[in-house]
Amino acid sequence: MELPLSPTPTPSTPTVCACTPTRTSSNPPTPVPWYSTTFEPTIGSLEHTPLDTERTTKVPILLDFLEPRDQSEHSHLPYSAPAHAKKRSAYNISCFDRTASILPYSNYTRSINRTMATQESTPTSKDGTPQPREEDVARHKISTQNTQYDQIGMRYNSMHDLPAVQPEKPSVVTVLGDVKGKKCLDLACGTGRYTSLLSTLGATTVHGYDISTSMIAGATSTYPPSTHPTLHFAVADCSNPSTLPSPPHSFDIVFAGWFLNYAGTARELTDMFRVIASQLCVRSPHSESKDGHGRGGRFVGLTTNGGDPDMKAPKHDFYGIEVVVLDPAYRDPETGVEVGIKARVVARTEPEVRFDVFQFTRDVYQRCAEEAGLVVRWRDVVLPEGEEERKEQGYWERFLERPTFDVLEAWRA
View 1 (tube, one colour):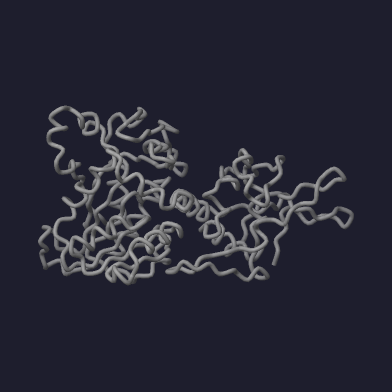
View 2 (view 1 turned 90 degrees about the vertical axis):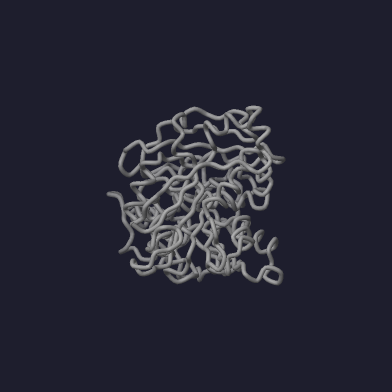
């Protein structure tokens, strides 16, 4: 059932979608809207299957409250909302954001298609205008941040040789310890760099999940099943446990590199930690593990440096990257409490790679992990082998004062 975008008009008033420009004699014919067919990926594969458009509320219902940005960079789209489109709610979401609802696999598009399938389940304002549900907007924020990488794709691999990124691998390997014979999960696996590393270190089997179809395509191409039978990749929203192909409590080790830093609220971060906790295997509390804790599997993660006392200061020409502070006093939009900063990372590769992240303080991480039933421990950054001479010469001094990342491990309380 198609929902009206405004109160039902009188018979003399033509019904016009609030997202569609009113056609006059000077207006050219409106092109076929990009939303005429909605697509959704099949979880666990790279296939895209069209939804039943007769039973699906289409995306025009969204565009009425979306705020347009500069349309010039989106000229490749076959449809653009009119310049006079108004934002009708407190949610600052742009339909022109390449990583927002225009993406066919966007969680937000899927959830709106579901929740707005009937008028009875649709929240409305006083004038009858459909409004987004809070839970859908929350899910959209995570999805939007994660799906930035669908535009980046395999270009992300060009960052691995940057000096700012080189300490990541030895830092992770040190914290992982012995993974031989263990079953591992790589959340937000990207192109499979750490998925492959876990296998190389001796893991029996490693599953890699990512919301970005292009990232999973790149991972599958780089590590095909024929030559890497222990690696298993699938498209999945790692912030939503219901989309994960694996059953709960399946893994000895859960790893997540650059996943937690896409939570825009403390609640979203807590939910991410809950997903992690749900995937960690459960052992008897009486059986002590080699890691010194006997309550099941262990989590190891890379995220933004929440322990940086100068996080509000940008990083210029910083070991191959730039960190631009977009909001030096970022407040949780749900609570109004300052939780850290919002920043843009620009990798000086060719071509450049850039993406936005949230940098929450460590105490926010610890509080959210505790709410999810996890205990967090922060670990030191480890420089690559062979860097002793450059370290003595002072090359790494600035980096060690303000590392670009934090390494953490966690387990059940």
